[in-house]
Image (tube, rainbow, N blue to C red):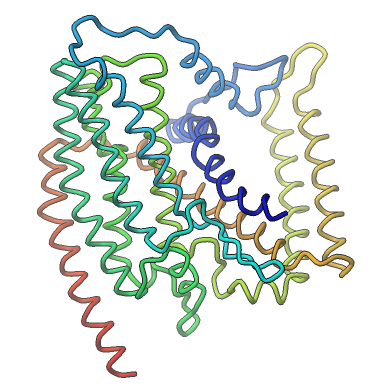
Amino acid sequence: MNTFLILLPLVLTMLYSLVSVPVLVWMERRIAALIQDRLGPNRCHIKGIRLGGIIQSVADMMKLVFKEEISPSHIKNKFYYLVAPSIAFMSAFLTFMVIPYADNITINEKIYHMQALPTDLGVLWFLAFAGLGVYGIIIGGWASHNKYAILGSMRATAQVIGYEVAMGLSLVSMLITYGTISLNEMVTYQSQSFSMIPAWGIVLQPIATIIFIVTAFAETNRAPFDAAEGESEIVAGYHTEYGAMKFGLFFVAEYIAMAASGALIVTIFLGGYQLPYLSTTDLINHFELVLWLIIAFTVVSSLIFLKWMRKHNIFAMKGLNETKVYTTIIIVFTIFAIIVMSYYALGFGHAGAVGVMILQFAIFTVKLFFLHFVFIWVRWTLPRFRYDQTQKLGWNILLPLSLINIFITAIVVVGVNYGN
């Protein structure tokens, strides 16, 4: 049990970053199809099983893995050309290491941290590796010895410098508000409420929230800040000369960086793994009631999903009805989950801290995937900003706004402390 709880944060880091990439690609296609009123991936299957289109994402990843590796002959610096995608990938992956997925759990008087890297310097760790990721883009563009790649890397450099300053300053106002740089302590702070208003970061610091979310889009090169790739202008930008898994690492790094930024937004501004008005202690003390509410939600949501699936999933192969397979799996899983939860809700078992930990994992996951939806929604709604518009927004608007916000925050915090 001890080993399992120690390794659990590492496993969750892998799930939220690497393993979630095919799901994020599937979400990208599905949401894009929804916004553009067209069908998404719906044909790729294994013996009639499509998993709603996820098989298409898996097929694309397999294609990248087994595709022939080719290096252009005109490239002089092979080492830098090969190492650049790895820098982008590892920097994005390591930013996830400090995210708290649940509150610290105490079993047999031993405390287990639900962070892959349990450090109080979480914000600084994120900023360090988020800034380091751009070096992969710069080196890749320079080593490619291609004018489009160099243009893309120069755009990325200017963009990350302008927006990382505003991002850091927006976080300074949050550090002043929370009085700590520990991500877990920030989440604990947000479990409070002031006059029935939850003490979430988005409520306490709406301006800092907006600034950070905008800069997160720019840091991850997501549209409308994807000028570094600019397919309609510079072919593909910094990764023009990359193919197979070298391109795959750049591709995966973008989605992992998006997921890491979303995880930090959830942690600092949206209450992290906490529910509004409920601390970890409250959940533990009223866990039986919480379980009954979860059971009711599970039953209702399963019935709604089954009805929706039977109406929309009309695909079928000879000898296999995909809808019936999914229906059987969902019913069996729902009944099993209800039996297990009822066992603890009726007082026959002692879930306690472990049950609350699992619930907090679920809360964090729901919030994180909501942020993924927002990232994708914005990409398929707004057109790409021009390079000069990107620089003007970063230097002329977000930077002064973040400085003003720090000044106002400091005055308010000093005034409140002086009044107390």
